[in-house]
Amino acid sequence: MNMIQRASRLALPLFSLIALAACGGSSEDKAEEGFNQGYVQFYNGAANSANSALTVNDKAAGSATFGDASNMFAIDPGSYKYQLKNATSSALIKEADVTLNKGEKTLLLMAGDAANPGILTLTHKREEKFDDEFRVFVANLSSNYDKVDIYTAAETDDFSKATLLESVATNTITSSGKMLKRGKYKLFLTTAGGNTPFFEAAAYNFQYTTSYVMVVRDKLGPMQQQVSLDLVGNSSTVEALEHRLAKGQVRIYNSLDNQQGQIAINNLPVADLVQDTLTDYIQLDKNDYSIAVLDENNQLLLNNVLLTINAGQSKSVLLFRDAEQKVGLVNFTEKNLPQVHEHEINVANLVPDFKNLHFYFVRQNETIESAKFHVKALEFKKYASLVLPKDFYSISLVHVADNGTISLLDKTETLQLEAGKNYILAAEPSAAAPSGYKITLVK
Image 1 (spheres, rainbow, N blue to C red):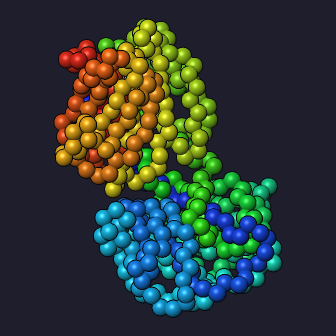
Image 2: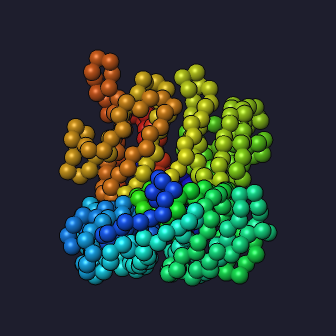
């Protein structure tokens, strides 16, 4: 493992598998009826895309980031030109013609490379009457699975009693929906023709008499080769259903200077203490764990600190010393984001000497005073997350004394955050730094 200050080692983000999100229909248990317009909705399944906006004949029809959907947009029946654009830069992504008929909904699913994405189109009638049933379509946007089988089972049943719902090849969507009785269902995914699930969602309550689209897509961010499912309904709400038995992971950053020893999880050593170093990810089953830190004589510096790992969850742990030189830790969950057009960076204050510190992300045309992006008044042992657009930044660490004196404790060179990396920025004491403090950027 590799330590870097101000441009630290990267843990490559990991592609996981796809999510199924659920979105509701009517809040009443009535059949869909009386739909006199045409309807269109956009789902963003292109992993390296920015927030993308849909327009229909130049009318704004909503936007969606990766793994999300726009609201359903109603318009008079007719033929239209639609466009998908970068919501920030307005750069054109895709345009085509679409016919929206009375009482029909068209779902546009963007998939593949955002530079030249494919668009899957599903059109279905909305006025069909469902008698205590719901309808399901399935799309497979995964690049990791050429074909998947999706099964359903009753809430209390296991896979041995599951029923095949659909078999779906990659970059396709079923054109005819399957009808199921309203209620709670477990969902399973297998490879084509397989009899061992690689994904099992906890029972989901399909409570509305409406149409759902299950989207199988690659899950991005720090997790690798995992599956989630997206359920798309008629609103922008997309619930990711996770594999309930998926492994989680943790990585540990050591800010302890001049300290040798080991890090242990559940009394088993997992890494040596190396100053200013971020470990590789450690794979763990869903469970509660204890973290301990031992010195070179196997004396405990930190013992039995709880670490909870949920299915499909990625966490970071940061080790520090407090004002009394006792070892402590702070941990946070990392989000499963592509980290391509923007980065969510986690910022932590590991300096016990001040009430709080300020972090400024200064672009080339800015100063600290004019910087748009910052984390202010971050207290010791606290962390915060900040979303940064793709750009060049110099990062400054600032302390403001009670008498108003402003001190620049550290500053990085101008750098650009790399696509696909999950960054941690830590302020920490440093005997080698002129101010006695430094900022360390690891990834």
